Image (cartoon, rainbow, N blue to C red):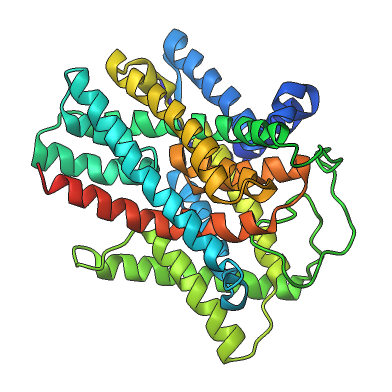
Length: 408
């Protein structure tokens, strides 16, 4: 029996999932100490409950996909609208260096997946599915490339395998980022736990400048109805343009996912208004909308996970995915952390890299928020992770995948 849940029901359940996650973090010190994000904690409970209901009672639920897609587009739009060229210049060399680390790992990820698949007697392209297609690309990339691999390369069940692998990555990416950062911070004595992880809002005024996207997620933003309406209109305009460009570019050489167009529209609108028209941009309203859509999107994504897809995976694929998780932990600990300077910012960046190296950009943002809520903010991480994870990584991943497929 499958229940169809409409948009309002989906939102209500997602909010309940967030409340469960918040309650668990307050009551279970292990989750709090290892910086597990609230949506991940609550979402895993919901996914496990869904698994039990499906396995033993044949009960499942389908949630409204459109509202989840809208929240995802709002999240990426908020990144674009926060991407002031003036602020992005401060990323400078660090952004390029981190991008180098990320690009290097995409190659490592595919090498590990395809090599293990060959050793285990599988088609090497299955290793690519359990590589950057799903673990760096996420569910959207898994669906797109899975269809191509089924139709053009004869990999039967590529979409199902891709969705299962992406599911595994989303869960593990949200779980491992915090512990990796905690290990690095403790080992190198980079920071002490602060009191900012108690989940309470702070009404102290925030800095007017130098605040990056999603920074100070626990702080109260002082916004008015007027600038909230203006900001909401900007979000709507960016998403409208993203849908328009996505439809227009379909099948053309410049075709890009809708969320990339949303991010790009946000960047363009922000800087035209700020630099060209000299209009004030309400960063606090953007942050409120961005953080709210991030939390709800993650809760819905985990709420919609079909863990029975993972249970049905072949043992060989599970081995590949577990090795991928281990390799990412080692890579972020010994490469990303060292290359980025072996300081507190580097530890937070490593947590973010775990997020989109095994899951998705929202997971990366949730990871660094969880770490900084415990140990204090990292302005560099909040500048670099959203831009790199949402935009550059998808371009790099697409180029790498397409280049590998040319040899098959």
